[in-house]
Image (cartoon, rainbow over all chains, first blue to last red; front, side, top):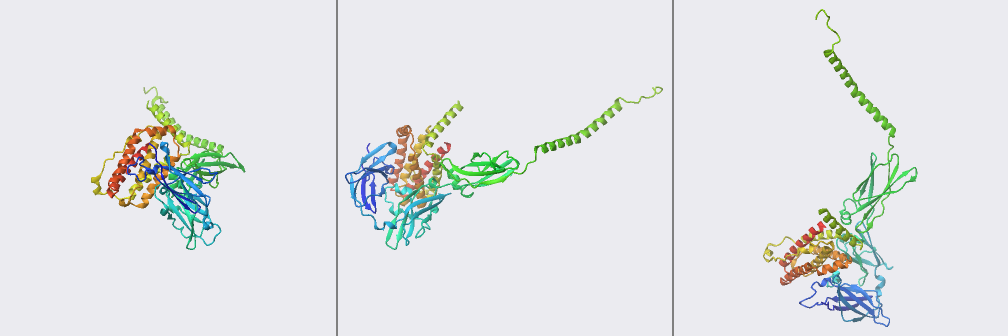
Length: 363
Length: 183
């Protein structure tokens, strides 16, 4: 079966065109393709001039095409595809629209939106374009709303504590849940009537988040060096460990008389690692990095932590001590034993082999 | 014999994981388990206990369990992806009469959608895709969800029809949870 053409509506906006696609069979009672949310729409558009180049873009049912030349005519057509089934639908009829002039308040808009995320603390940063008297309002949209066939323009919500601010950054950790993604935008306002929305930035929390370095503590016992790791984000924050399935890469080396020896590496999953057989009277240094193999992410290395191993007792002294101890034990045990045996021997000899004979005249 | 069979299974699982991992989809199995966990929790959170008066209207939907029982790990992965898409579609309908917690519902949809999108970005081997497209149990799966969709439409998306559908989706996700834990 063939996928029919979708419906297409166009609306010129500031600096671009708003595209509204309605799924094929939109108004039919009996449908062939029941799940119309699984369609992926491919928009093909070109400038209505002689050297027009066809551009192709994957679009949501309601989407905007930016970066179009102002005051020119562009033509659009869209098709609905089902990539998983390898099916491409028919194109809608071509529809053309003329773009408006570039917005006058273009200098008002926030630009260069970027996200900085460390240990699940998310910050949005942007740059203003020189204007001092501007108020910002950061808004977010739940990612899935773009996939629905309805217009999501009224579904944007404000990020708490980032409404009507003058600073150019916002901490939006409060709205983030780990399973799910979001779109963010900044509304710049000057006075009562001038307002401009920035470009949207897509935030996939677990992908964009950076892992911070873990904490390291060292402990010694006999000839063992214990490395105690505290996970990034602190012990209370289970999110990092839970979602990233963190492992730790440990680098350790011996610093003897100002010469650094070969750096050894060890990878562990638990938060305790042990280095056996450390030499006495040496300086051991350790650095730890947390990494997630699943997400292909690693943290920076922690600060170097060093510890001095105590002067060990020389081997000779230990051997001598053990020898003397053994000798003492032997003496303590052997002496009464010898004494007891001697007494027993005497008694037996006295009873069974007496040394004095009775005189011959008594017998 | 048992050892050989076990080795073959391990071999299959290893080979399928290498295919997925070479395409930057390493985090998906772990994330999938989290998605199922969260989805179940949010399904519970969005509404209250199943209303007694709706027990009369219960319909046997009969989820096709054989779709999750394939030997191949990739086929099961594709089946789960499709189930998520169907659930996402059902919950995008008119929910005003259900009167559920909007925040929990939004998060539920958002969670499912992220997983669907990321699974789509992972190109699964063409051969497996074709095999899955022709699977008989896949048609049974489509029929199952169509039945639920029709049921909701016939009842005009009233409270009871939504509660019954929610309970059914819960059962479905629990089955998937069991299967993914075994993998």
